[in-house]
Image (cartoon, rainbow, N blue to C red; front, top):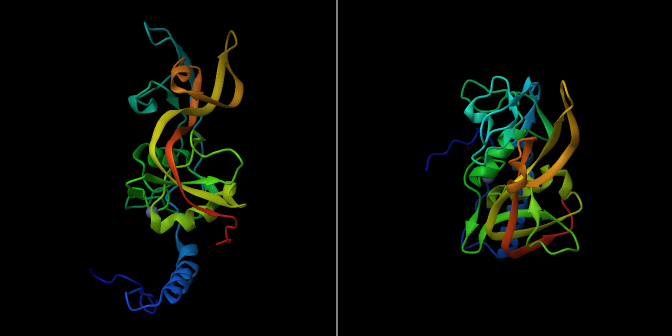
Length: 241
Ligand SMILES: [Zn+2]
């Protein structure tokens, strides 16, 4: 494996000769040194914003309801739900570029990682073991199994970076494996047609797919339901990065 590290940056390594406590300390140090420099793939970049689209009423058999005036197939998911468009700040390589806004996410890239079960930090496949994919959930009294989440699974390497990035995990988190994180539905705006124009009926509604197909929703977040879960660890404090 070639070494592409910047000159002058010391890489700590772990081997079978290291005592476990020293290995753990080194691992923590490694995270403390390197994690803050990682910009999550889902991070919102300066200038990225929702696109105002002209809405229209489509009146076709089986397709009656809300639509974009200039709609393209990519505006809907496989369930026929309409999605909010957002601009993207991309560099020459086609990857997100520019200053990033801590704690804020780009809904389009978040959706991409949710659909693919990719890590929201590196956009490579999320960590998966025999017990399923790795998810981080806020600490709460109710059981994790059966919970709905709009946050994607994460790879093992970026679990700590991800925990620091999410505002909802500031008070700690439960790391779980879910063997069946089923696609459940969407969160978004519900609109209605008020005679001559569309208006927002509800700003933030969560609907299972069977109810989101009514074509009055503009989706912002994909929702998965975490089933067949196994708790990996509970962390009561997330150190700021
Ligand atoms: Zn990752």
